[in-house]
Length: 177
Image 1 (spheres, rainbow, N blue to C red):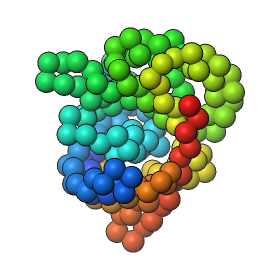
Image 2 (cartoon, rainbow, N blue to C red):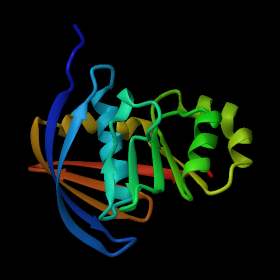
Image 3 (spheres, rainbow, N blue to C red):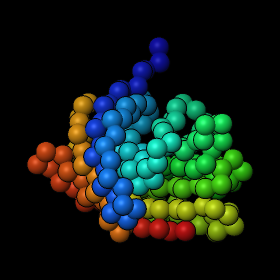
């Protein structure tokens, strides 16, 4: 019998100083049985960094033909394809063929090795932005997680400040491409 996803309810207070966005979102995130809590939180960070009224989580790991997060128009066109992790150049090439804007958010201990091997292939792809989260900081993201949680996410320059009750966490990110 297949394991079912674990459901998390997140109230996200978003303050994006870079784009002058101040909003609140009630989100439902499904943690796939093969997904780590850190990866799910990175999906939440990608959502906040790219917030748009039409942005939504896809079916995730269970749908190989969809990104982790995407912005779709009312007619079903993909306007922004957002991947999390260490995607292959082939997967991102496919995303470029389906969307005018593609973003990839890498994280984890192996991200530097992955990028040193993949960066040449990514440089040839148009309309792709690749970002990397600070590994030491992102590994602590799951400390903020509860099944029902309220998190304030403040974005300024290349840092995210997260607050949950009395807990605070800073998460840096860098643009690789």
